[in-house]
Length: 333
Image (cartoon, rainbow, N blue to C red; front, side, top):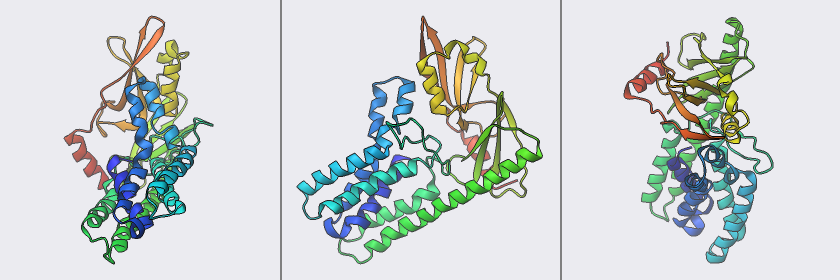
């Protein structure tokens, strides 16, 4: 999830766990705990593009890191602030750290829960990385807690007012996911589309319009479905995988790291100058409903002698026109 959401979640958790014992400091410690796993973004300044993709949400988002960091942070906190015992600090740090990696695993990026034992990434694909419907109750609640007096009887009520709706919304995202999966499988069967595997994931800033990405032997089917659509029909487009364009790179570790990050949901394109680019299809298109394959995540592949150099292409943002189309498509067809 986005950084602001992690911060306000941590503030609410801190208040509920330790607010009555250490006052407003609980919100500060909660915010730090819920943000700490993202310390791995610092490494992106020192490593190549392909390595930074896998290091982010890697070890610092693992269960092992959560256990070690919770114990160390609780010990140091208890040593400096004795207003709360070690078990209380352990609860505060542990809940903050674990909820961070739990929420992140619900987005498409993938989270390395089991690092360093295995590089398998956990991803439930139930919520977009920034979803105002999920974050807003936390934000309102956190602002209220900054205003309400320390000894007010309403502090717990305000904290729960942010937590309960957001937990309910997470449940709603899993319900939507199950519904969309059934509709996708129904359409594959009706349209006689044979797929090896597929994923469904929400489109930007909402949980009502979903992106369907399905793989066959040579490429990928893409489609959209809104929970407000009036029937269960999905119109699919086809994107060739063109994986043969990567034959010259197939033994290159950096190229294979890109493929591992994409979880195999990628295609390759070649422009008029012969330049080859890899596109991670899980994050969709910038022009959601246009004819151009304007991919959001692009990586340009170049050979320099015996080495391959990867350059992160410009990450395409959704234009204002595409955003208007997104809103209209959410309303259903």
